[in-house]
Image (cartoon, rainbow, N blue to C red; front, top):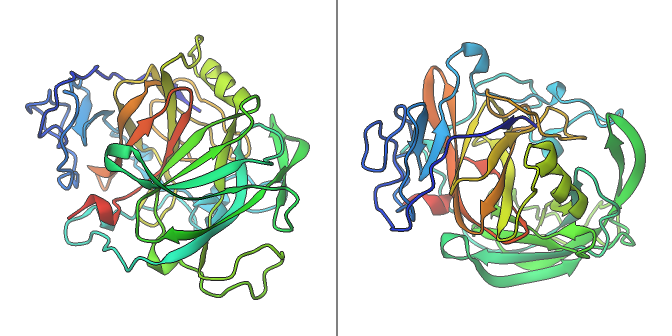
Length: 383
């Protein structure tokens, strides 16, 4: 993970309209130039921005300008560029990579006027899968998975359903634990299943477990598209607990308490995440849900630091001093972020121009992690 402090300014508490768009000399403080395709952002900022001269203002955040050198142009990540999981190759389904190879230009059509994604017909499906462990941690057993409707400005809406993940399920999985690129053991990933989840609807997934071992994790920008539904039922499933269709498979994420404490230390935050604050983490993908390398991320209000990670999906670690943006994991983290509303955005350099890669408004919770992966614009973000 590359640790790279970003220059943010603390925003005023007075709501201002018109803070979202980029503007080199704008009312909200300006930045270092224009960002294409962020005009769809029409919301108001809850705080004024004061971007530095080397930063861009976009969607209520200040973002460092992408490096001009062509070798740092934002690009898709190929499955063959990621190190294998033991002897198992990386796949698009599990690793959000391009099976045809990397370094191609991002797919950004869903960011362009006239090409926005349209919402389909909402229906209820069963969301199911295993609970994956980010980084280190023991068996993901008895982890509670909850799905909520997303409320205004990232608030938790009504609870849709919940399930306790179990490693005793016939659908549980086993994975290797990696330390310093060496397999040091295995852990079991519990299986969960939640019925009655609406598609074409912005949702929030929360995972929680024994507080001695796990931290609460809230995942935003969870959206099931109509064309992603598996309607085949349970025919041919290798395990007995798999639900009948219509359904959608999703690997929920959990984070160990030890990683919550150790990652900030590795990233140069010696005091860790302090009371009243939390963390934001996620990945930057394009409209085809492929990870992007060399994307720049902005988070507002100001975190104590914003960091990028290394290239190893089996052992993601902070990478100090990384100025060029995301690595091949597309992974970032903002540490020690005040609890409350938080704006996250990303930009990249594509075909010589700086373009928006999306934005999302979330909430940070005291002593917890908020996860948000940008995947272009969702239907609920545009008219």
